[in-house]
Image (cartoon, rainbow, N blue to C red; front, side, top):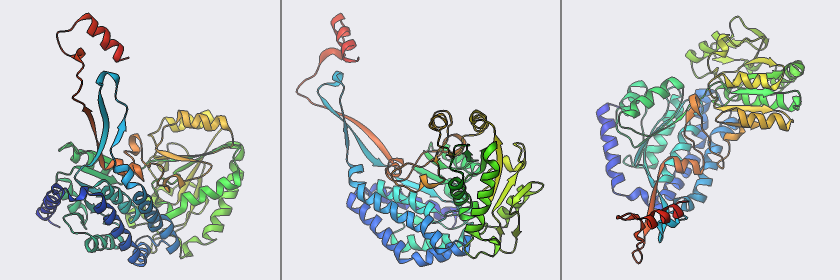
Length: 459
């Protein structure tokens, strides 16, 4: 799509937003119903596209993509009217007599740029929030997942008029053209480098942004953990979608005395879930493309492989892999892996693990396996991260009742459920004063008794 066409599309949406039709609550709910109906109608097609792009099994596609989208739609539809109602707050005595309240209003025309690793769900969930808040929206799916991108664009085109909700297919040229336009909000999910570029472009118009990025999310296992169950849950969270999950455990910090036992159970559950020959497992996902396949394979070079390490370039599959004797200056510890490779490091006491995490960029997620309440308290109090789990992995993002987002280098902003509505809304603060009384305290001339009264009222 040419830049002139994109510019015209943005102008059309801005004109439609100015008609104020998208602010109508019934219209928003109707739009969400239409979206849900369209997804259900195309569910098989969506799953087939996910199979082509990432080799996801139907169950995994439903569990981590369409099913989560349905859950978000259900939750948002149920609560939207309450969220959109003006919220009254107490009025300070100094502003007597009046009423204080906030009114949520949509930003206007918003841009959603989604990634390739969960290409359907990570396009739909922010779109649900944008619609619920009353915005017009342009969705830009990732060109790295072309089959899902095609389905998304077709679904949106058949469901909504382009002046309201539109989708733009394409790659770098279309991304650049979109980011040259003036949007009222930009929601981006992807890597840090592109996130910085998005923020740079947004600065031209002082456009607010949400950046859902990533980083090296640690998984810490101490001696008090249920080692067998920890291993089972780590294997699930790490190797889901072939490790191409922004909140997947990126590296493992395990207390020295339980490392051997943990590795033993990790290997057991890797074989139980993916088989002795995972590259032959038809339900095991693949890397998205050759570029990322080569990058992850390169990170394994020269490393001590405890299990796995095999790969098939023709299928773009890399076997679930554990790396031992990893040093913090190894290449695999210098970037987010985003693949089925798990480096294992050890620590003697929790303070050592704590310092290891603290001296790195703030991660998108952190996972702690422990039954020690003091260790749990220290981790929550002293470590900064976007979100996470205690005694599990990745499931914190699978609820509409908790916001999801990063901090520092792992991103900014939050969404899911009410947080999505708030992200795509401006909270307009209002004080309504009544006319039957007008306290003279604030007006000149100032006197000693007025100063006394002001000090009293403002305490």
